[in-house]
Image: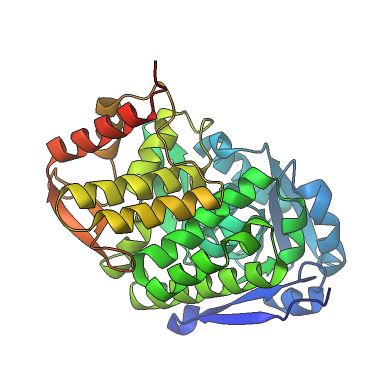
Length: 370
């Protein structure tokens, strides 16, 4: 099989613009990314699963620098303030100055925590995203959102801090477990669901190839999703308007993740279920048609993603968690809903009673028949 072509996508943010490179062999291509490191110090933040596989590929590019690594345990539960403190201690022990760089080698947890740590050290130093999961490649590595989880909710502490570059090496997907790969596809679907019906139709046509990890289909899906997100971020960097649409499914999904103590569902799985709940609520409010909900559910299922609320979760607990969502305003729910595939919108003042009915119906549907 031939090596996939390199895609280069520009995130246009004036003086803080940066490239997103998507291709094979990029981690070892240190002539591409080493010039981005402006100082003498670098801290690689990774986790105990990814580092043994891919940190050796970076070492030649780090030669001559004062560098070290800080490794998290694997999993969403480790995206915490305690680990930010440990990362900052690692920067201190390194003697990192204001021209130092943090390199995030891993998935979304690593990228979010590394970016937040870089934003905090000396009020902001450079960092480079090297995502190793599909979900991080298509979503969390692009756009500068960084942060950590709190016991009361996901990503409630954070900062906007743009990377110097995003380097998405497709070779890392070869070792990605099937469940994590499928979770990444949820974010690809989300991009199409909120603003690109033609892309959604493309995903329906190529679902089997994507499920089989066909390299050409995967590369095309990543590039199209990143190009879409880059445009949104360029127009609305700090989520004052359009960028909020990227949270389709996330208010429900984050509540599901938090209720499961960040161990029951992967982020992409929470988003998959959350998107379907948002579609069902939109239908209940008369905004969309059942055919759109059915198409979304069918595509999620074809790509092996969950569509049911996990057993044991309570609708009122989920609603309480949704009240903590960052998009809410003036004590009212503010959700991303849709008028059908490709037509998402921000809806303020959503009646909690309608949300509860939607959650209760979904929970009832998920119960096994007696």
